[in-house]
Length: 155
Image 1 (tube, helix red, strand yellow):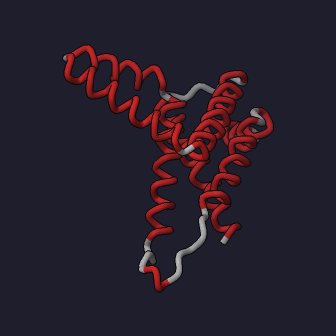
Image 2 (cartoon, one colour):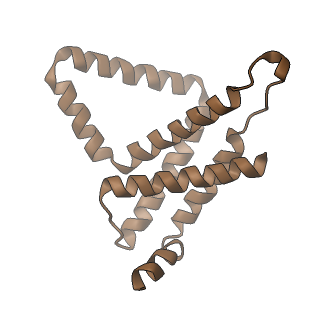
């Protein structure tokens, strides 16, 4: 019973979780673009764009939740060979360049990443430290559910 009470009171003890929910709701509102006309032949485009936005949010949450594990794996891979080091460096530079070309995507990434990091910091402040995979899964669920609610509100 006490664990259920602590789980329910978590947003009150860690208010940055509410900020994460609000940011995710706002992002869900913004992810809904104009629906294309049936004559254009792009009927499935909103579904594809929603899937890409959700994948984008999952990647941002995973990178912000498990940076030490991801950096360790990437550095081990880069240390394995010079070719892998070159490929990974070019991939990072190319993806970074694409984000810089599309500044609205960069701002969405920065806003969502900041909210996730603040939520993690608030959870650490109240000494709630689940394993990284479990914390990443919980934050992904919070972000995707909130974004889905925002999308439903906008529709």
